[in-house]
Image 1 (tube, rainbow, N blue to C red):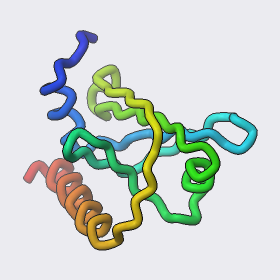
Image 2: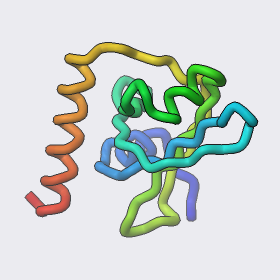
Image 3: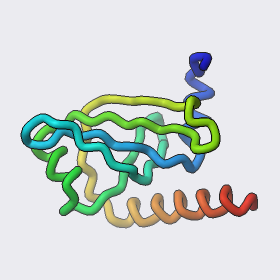
Length: 111
């Protein structure tokens, strides 16, 4: 697969693909789970309950990786690694999650 340009990466991340979030458990073993994600202002956002294992992992060690692949073309993907910032902005989260779900449903129904 050819390397994507920054513009292609931004366009790819704007699609309603599911991401896999990889955090580290307390014993440093990886924990990988599918998550809703969003991409805005050159940042990735992941939404998860505060009580989830991935949040406990991030509070313990904020290093995280995301792997986002296109379900129809799984070898078309983006991987990003960095340090997580925990954001507690319920209104923004609800709006963004609603936007993601609407976008995913439209894509699924070809609207």
